[in-house]
Amino acid sequence: MSSETVPVKPAVLIVIIGESVLQDRLIKLLKTHNVSGYTITQARGEGGHGRRMGDIAGYNTNIEIKTLVSPEVSDAIFIALKENQDGHALIAYRHNVEALYD
Image (tube, rainbow, N blue to C red):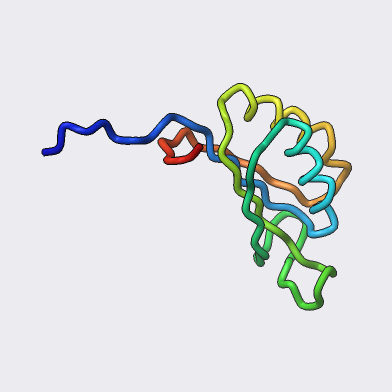
C-alpha cells in the first residue's frame, strides 16, 4: 500500500435534467454561482411532463447538466432552481462525492 495521500476532496455532484429550452438559463444560473465547469448531454425519457424522446433538435428534447460544487453552493443552486422552474420540466438531484479536480 502506498503512503501517498489519495488526491481527492469532498464535493457535491449536481445533476440537472430539464427541457433543452432552459439550457442558456441554466448555464447562466451556474455561472452566477461561480461554477467553473459543467458537462451537458442530450437526455431522453418519460416523466410527469410527458415523453421527451428528442425527435427534432430543440423540440421535445431534454438535456442533462452535471457539475461539481461545494455543499454551500449546491444549496444556493437548488434554491435558485426552484425559483426558476416556471412550469418547465426540470428535475435536479445531488450526491456527496469525493472528486479529483482543481
